[in-house]
Image (spheres, rainbow, N blue to C red):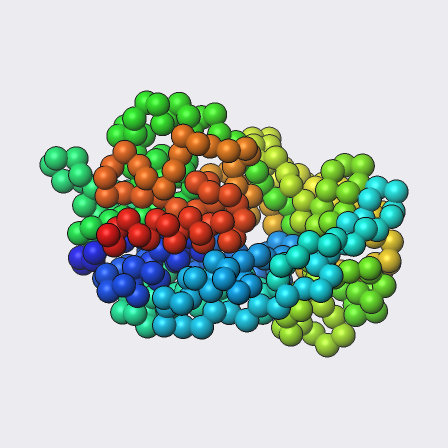
Length: 361
């Protein structure tokens, strides 16, 4: 198959680029290894609940914002987003609560996955192709060393006449797609200095009565061990009288892959992490009482299995990385996503909008 542009990975960055290129008349194909779009913000559904993948606070949906700019070019409507009157409450270690006064924070109807699904719809309406369950192995090169397309795990080769865009992390972009043997030494050296952040999440069911006892449906809790967030989803996908809730805290990533020599070791490690986090949650939020039930958990290994991101790092890169950008050393190969921009959703979209101007120029 031949296209003007190929996008590897159906995260928000890749979908944004593909939607814009398709709307501008370029033949575009998105290749995604998973069975759904969205990457790190793909829909999370367990036990009849539809969970927020994070804290559920988003910027850029107001008049003149990045999403108005993006969807003004697309043949579909922007997902419904609601401006939050009281965005969230910060609970300090002493138990005191402080309401934020931050403006322009929104919730997205049915969560951020609806944004990814709307972009995928736009690609298809514009004549583009979104191929799920299509893992990409590596870039394909011609005799002159120019990237000409990608090789799929199935053995198929897909060609790109104008541009190839990676929506993988920078580690996987160079380590897997480009190949370390083709990556310039200075880039390999820089990649070794970068550190990403991981997340540990508990997806839970909360009784409506317990939700009413909390000072806010979105909270940032600062306790003696650090911070964690609480997001109670407004999704209607939940058993009557209950609400889906997501508790998230940062975790280091290496230990999830280093210290478990067997599946039993890993299960013990995960159980210990759950017990520790569950204790933190109940200590900081006594209002919950017994009206909260664990549905599922997620850790860096979970995210690695789902997304194949290196070590399951889903919270961006620690600190700025000016040596990495959307452009690569190959003239027709580009990178987009939260490891070459700020990890916020609107920042990834803004970066992708800028990138989409290059292949279509």
